[in-house]
Image 1 (tube, rainbow, N blue to C red):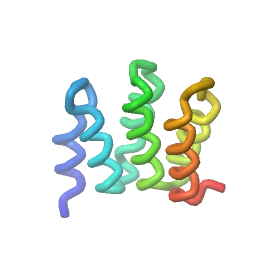
Image 2: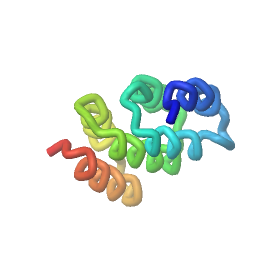
Image 3: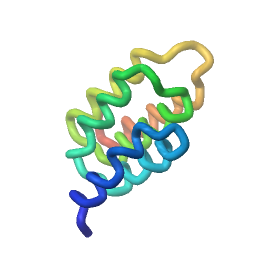
Image 4: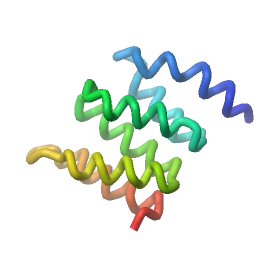
Length: 100
C-alpha cells in the first residue's frame, strides 16, 4: 500500500546478515523498481553468499524490467560450477521478468 515506506524501512536490513534474505524477498514481493539500485549495489558488493544470491535472483525476477534483467545477466555470467540452485533460480527469474 505504501511501497516508499516499506523501502525506507527495509533498506537497513540489507546490511543485517540475519535479516537480509527476508528483506530481499519482501523487496521482490513489493515489486517496486526503486529497490533495484540498492539490490544491485548489494550484489556488486561481493559479500553475498549463494543463498542470498538465490533470494536476490528471485526478487529481481518478481520486480522485472530492464535493469533487473541486466542484473540477472550479470549474475548468470558470474556463476561458478556447483552453483546449481542459483543457476536454476536465475533461469526462473529471467523467465518471470520476461528478459528473453
